Image: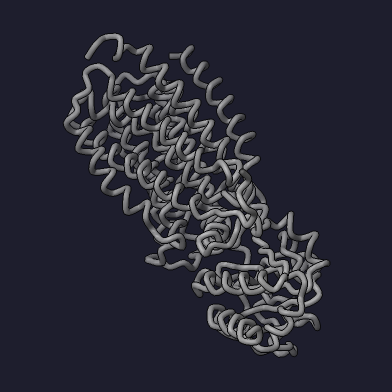
Length: 98
Length: 464
């Protein structure tokens, strides 16, 4: 547990740095789709819920896991859908480069 | 199921690929040209990760499949909402994300109890505290944005003290559980108290502060997911949560700067209170110059460079499509038209850009505050539609103003300034705007949609 935790902390720290560097460069123009996208990606928590509901170690785990899958899946589907709808609307006034 | 396919190493490698795709997705979001590819990369990563998870040994698919289908059915309408409703949809999805994390955390606790190692219990507590306060906080924010709850901030004496005391008691319960994880009866308290805190946190927050709050809740949702990653030892989840948390954090800092609030103010959710008293009794009798649509059209058609400053009022009046017509008409006449977007124009970061993009205004004409401010001195006409405080020059010059120090759009530096406004009543924050009394300012009184429509008719009529 302890060794795992330290490794996990390294992963977290590195991911946070990558997040800051990558997201800092995103123009305010796209901040709303950005938030929708990170929200959909965050719903990757669904993997934990699937294991919980799928392994079925207790009734409670199945019940809570299933509700959690519903909540996360709706974020995945809705999040990607609306992000793509928003981004489709962003058009340039300059003709597309060949 | 063959053992090679379902082996843990295979699944871990699939997760690794998904993690890389997630980071790539955010990188591609950097430019509007590649942003849609970013969505595809994210989707690919998600499909890989979910498929990989389903390969795990001993997964019973019955409830999983039903839940996945049900979630999809709920998710589709949430992906098809109007663009004006995106802020409340986003708040709602933060709530769903937080709900998922809290429920998984709860189940994990009862599966492991009573023998939960202290370190695990600490991370688990962090997960459910952040998750449950984000859940109710986001529901409250969504309710306020959807206007099913009163948008007016509700404040009382000692509010900060009460809120901090509630949060502190949640942390105290967590600390006790770390030492005595066998006291499972306390676990519901560990969830209930932060649920209450989430409500209390949003109660004092008004509509104008929503962009900051949504960003902050975004960050909390991400951090709670990362904590869940620690509990489940899932690097994929830790990375996704860290990315989301970082994104929400950056946006919160941006928004708090744009709203002229200190960051600690934002971090503890204690904002939205100091306004109000400011300039309530300000003189309303000073003379202003007003103009008709005909006069406004004449001035606009004589201009070389026009900057339009849209605010949330423009979206409320549903005027963005009329504004697009105005943009088209002026552009056709060779007028250089640009849009100046203040970071808090709208109900969430970047909201105004989406609303204008929806009205088919090209994104390269949408400039943020830092890009457009140097251009105002060379601008013939600055046309303000439904924005108020973000154009208030008192923020630069009057230390006694409640918004002093807030970064604003320098519309008063343009040669002529036109402001479409229903009446002289002060804006959201109740602060008088000296811009309206300048000699170079023309007030265009009326509904934004109708007034812009009248200007467009005047311009096209005169043209032929």
